[in-house]
Image 1 (tube, helix red, strand yellow):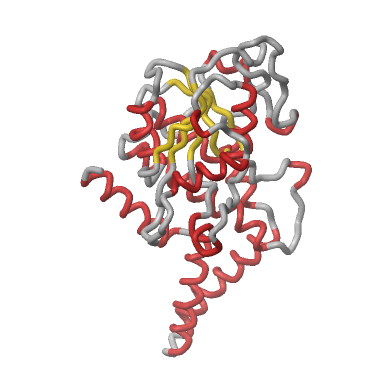
Image 2 (image 1 turned 45 degrees about the vertical axis):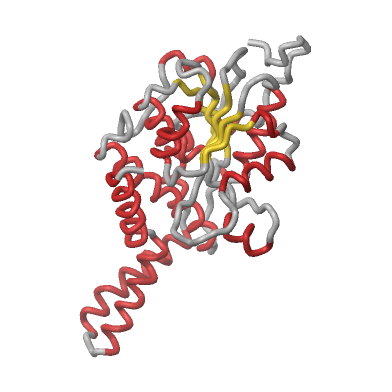
Length: 299
């Protein structure tokens, strides 16, 4: 890992700690309380009144959906799977490393669909390798390497271990692809890319920057369809979508400015249009594997 990558990683962690919506709300409350304690009532009013209003609005209205849905709609679900690929790329982030170490059992977090989808695709494409990249995203020490946990999860999902090509050093999306590229058995091949729908634009932007040909296979949706949006006092649910959506927009901007992505908001290629549909119109897996000895879905 070179110094520039480490500096970028540390800076991104610091900026996110400062700009996380939940952290901003708590910091605002703390500062407002301190202003009251030190009898700066006017300044406290100017901070706490807008902060309270914003918090109430975030609890009441589904603003988070409007931030999340453009990300999740950018690359829609596949209407049909390609007849041939050279591998399946799965990005880490679903593993709950801290809880896995605490309880000594494999644990998955909010993005568990990445593993489930990869396991299903491995059965639809029984001859291709499965590439996994995921490492530590924070500085908390752990005893078990991240890729060892991923291997155990794939094993529980009945994915043959000899098909796995695991990379466990990447700390962010840019490093995922930087470290996977030398491992690809077909450098000029085409790979199904499995990651969360809201994360897909940034992942595709990095892959294209590094000239890795990927077909997006988004999973793990977090937003609600327009007809499902309604008023309600559910601050926690709103925040669960707001946090990753805001983080992803910041990430898209940082990656583009730093030259790690090919575009600020990457879009589907023209030849992808025949493969894509709106995510709310179809189920997760639309085609059964072919009965031929190749095990590949029909084109």
